[in-house]
Length: 402
Image (cartoon, rainbow, N blue to C red):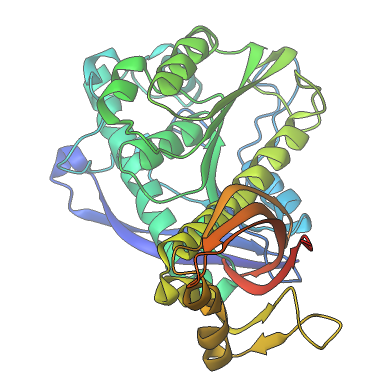
């Protein structure tokens, strides 16, 4: 694993009540696997928007049941599993951050202050009004949004496909991820919210059809508004067409570790990894669906755009053990559209797709009519090798009729 510390992503203003004249440089840490990444995970730390850091947001003694796992440790875990992982810094309340002009919190006067008040007392700070707290939250959400966009911009450098990037966090960090994805609409493959919150009115205001899937994790003894709000929030997301999942942590309070047993099974860390892996596979499923759609539209340019520059197509018939092998752009351009010239109405219907790691599978029924009026119908499959969000190899098989 390679760790790169303090990658700057933005300069942001602080000292809001004093005119916002101060500035801080915001950064994130990258945890990169030895091999080319499967995808990416961007995580924001927790701490009630008052404390914590990208290096460590574990709080021993904060809860009754144990100590939470820091987001930096989850980043290490994901990097060891083949993902590029990033731990993000954002501005905190003691810095009095300047919020953005365009706001995303629908009811700033209703920001929950129970846990905020406890943390401020621990830190020796006076009570804070809800609207002032909302300003801090807006700034943190804006920072998370900027960080995700910056990380997407270095996808080629770090070797991951931005279509396979999941964003998330714990507690305050989870709220940042929720609003960055669904209100600010930063592109991502999924959202992983550990004890995060997004009230139903903001779900209704911001979440659009086609929004990325969401996994929410909450503890049986979580902070009250998180524990009580997770089911209504998930229901609101589901009503907007979002694919949702809920993992609970029996017996634990807000500060649960990654190895805590989770329901419906496994551990918290295992549930997180499974969700991130599914989101990465979903991006490849969408690739295969676009490829099948381009075939049925007879769109050669779209097909070529979905394959790598060194892509290979191995046909179902030919003189070689692999059928006939077509490699390179010119050969692909000639071979991919061959069926259309023989069956002008060619279609590959009833398609079903599956992805496992860097391999894909499509099952279909080919139907077409040739120039003489003869109708052909045959079942077949395509096997795919996937690389960097494109198809590197298409290997076709079909039933032999007659």
